[in-house]
Image (cartoon, rainbow, N blue to C red):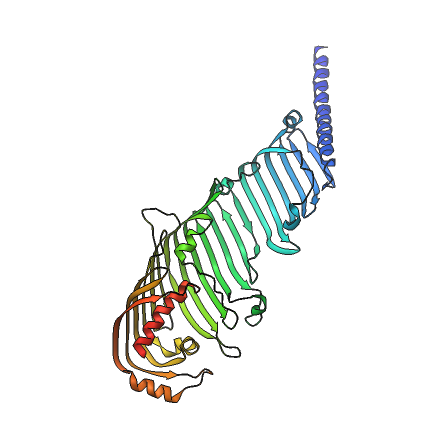
Length: 486
């Protein structure tokens, strides 16, 4: 009798537990469904609850408001559902979701009057999202797009804090197959692969591409502007961190590496000049609305081409710097800092025989800077493409050395210039590019053509503040070339 009674009690307890399980599932599911029904913007095909393990499974979830649409094929939440029955906050152990489609129209999201969901999530121990397609648009124009992205992270405080501390979560792992960003009126940015793991970011097959051809883009600008085309096999950002305090953002990185890249810049100078003041790099750094600290930026195997169109229906001036490699160190905009000096040191080539050395020193808290350049074995064919339209002359021969060393600020340059060659002739050109025989003959009669080594000082070379830093550097060199040659 005692055993039969025990069996009855055990069976009764099991029955109560099973009934309690189904009843709790029913109660919790009803409560969640009633909350979801209050949200007109939410729809789904099925909702399943397992109160025993605290699992909530939703299929074909859709959240849709004015300017915002989210579709999720399947989402699983592991939470303390019993705790949620008596408390408002939700602590999620694991959230997994797959096949997410997120489409947000930024132009209308501010005007959305959708009711805020009454789900107070305080923390997420683990998140696993796979196969995400994200689109941000404005006025039907796609501004940003990420395809086939995956996100994994642990120990997230929710909602994400506004100081961006969650970006420094070492468990955060974001990967995407492709990225697209509408950079400005003339350019788009894209990358064939992106990853952010812990403190490291990486872009593969990174590109900045023009939206228009060199002949078309002038129809979309009102004044002079560069058209750029940049491609890099890989960009790696190591020891990255992003901080924000009192609305002041602070970006830090130990090292940025740019590998195997090509950079083409085209400027049509036949349209209206941009007469706005161009800040020097030190001023541009100080004017950033965030703090920046990068220990070093390394560039390897960069080919840089610059073109200027000076006259319609003529070939643009063109100059190419090949195999550029070097570093920028201590790049920052922190004023009143002991190690304030920023250094740039690069080497390049015009041709296989030529070498170009460029060094720049500048201060983050002033406009003072120093430049040293050394160019050896300059063949006429490597620079005539730019000299002809820019200086109305061509060289015939090889320059053994061009060396310049100067200091500058926002108003003037002062320094020394050296030019050496064994045999060199000048061809003075007409405006249409043809050779002016008389002017060429006269020029070669007046200048020393053989065994020349000129060294002299250049003083008070004034800056045109409506031109760029690189135009400023070119102005010093062009003054030196004209004085050495003419």
